[in-house]
Image (cartoon, rainbow, N blue to C red; front, side, top):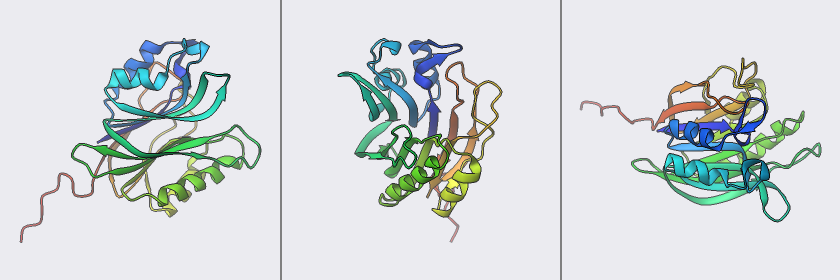
Length: 234
């Protein structure tokens, strides 16, 4: 199965122009089975009052759910989206703590049922960039995922480097996909976007260059531990 995380920065291209069609085409091109999106707009003027999760879902042929991080006025929303080529069930939006009074952050935690695969527990998030907040929030997400059955997947823009993210995830039993830098999109210098799995094998991973956003996506192929392996000869 193919899992992808991508901070879309509400579909920004270059110096600030928003291109919804390019966003939809780019995300559809991943051919993802599970897709986590961050910085998603809902009914915002800057994105022509569309629901960006729904726009991407239609283009990619995926089911979707949205996790609201904050709202402005009666309609405008902003947050994360989780999309899947199958049912998204037992969904919860988990609020993240704000130890330094940073921007409000959330995680979507859900069970995803893909055809031919066991139910997967997925956590998709966008954590704080404020010093000290991201690490605390990651611990909260890991604890929330611990209450869900394996196999487990955590993915998103964690806004912390591998020196913070990897020890926390590995200690909790996750394998972290090893990638190069993901930010900024042009000549990336730092790695703040992650895919981590528990009870699954990472087959391959890439950080492709795409024509939209200020982040690069992570595209990972994963399998169940025995998928594709012949049973032992008695």
